[in-house]
Amino acid sequence: MTDLGDISAGRALSAARKKKRLRYKKLSSELNIDESYLVALEEDNFELIPGGEAYVKGFLRSYAKKLDLNPDEIIQIYSSEREKNSDKTSSDLSLQLKKDNINQTKYLAALVLVPALVVVFFLSLAFILGFPTNQKEQNLESFKEDDSIQLPEKFEGQTIEIPTTQIEDLDKIIFKVDDSPEESDKDLRELPPSKVDELPKPVISNQNITSIRVFDDCWLEVFSEKERLIYILAKAGEEYIFEEDRLKIIAGNFKNIEISFNDKIQNLEDYANKINVSCIVLPAGNCSEFRTPNS
Image (cartoon, rainbow, N blue to C red; front, side):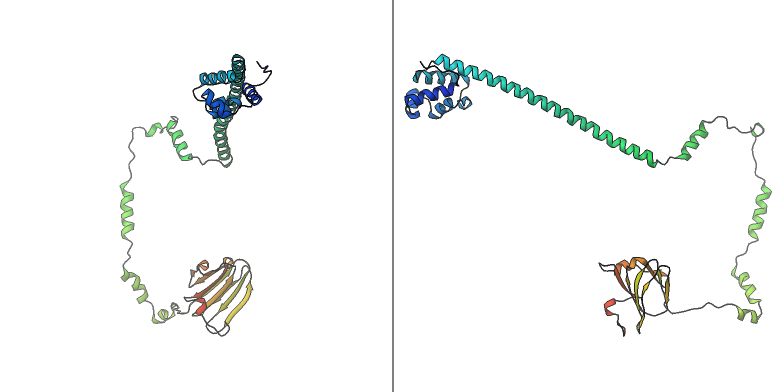
């Protein structure tokens, strides 16, 4: 018998086989054990042996006898190693479970703490900004609950009447009003002819009026159909008024001005390009088709 010393069962089998110079094929045929299982036994890969621990011990015992090793000693070494691995596995599993419990505790703590912090944040924000309170409802409730508010004793059990004379007087006042057009025209007909001629007559103008108000510095160019009217850097507070049938207006930084045509404000953003330059033709038209001597 060979002194195995402090080596594993698989290494002991491998050393004995190599010493006898035996091949797996021959051993497999004689032992009726598959070559892959013999390799697994020598490499201590016992989990590759089908059938569980009973088959592993049976293969070890047969293989040890064939190699002139003590089968009981090989089985003892195998069992001892199995116990060590089992203890190590249990220790690793216990350690892993502890880590998992710690991680789970941290996760649960975060799961509870984060919403709580969010609630505290919004409550603090609400406290700083202040929530609007329905003061009217509070006053009404306090009024309902206040039993100290009572009618004076001299009004208790009495009926308050409204004098009818006041209503009759009101009817008289109402019927004195006369909105008939005949009465309103009567005063005008009774005026002397000279006075009628002196009455102011409404001024009717067919001229279009365009107004440009400047809120901040803005490059401004205005054309009529005959000529260029202005070409300036308009300053804040300035206002330009034009009485022209048609105008072409080009404005840089168009957001700094306001253009109204016959008192109707124009939306310059609809006519602007990507560099904040707006071109508009009033009352209507296309800038590219508007032609002047200087454009």
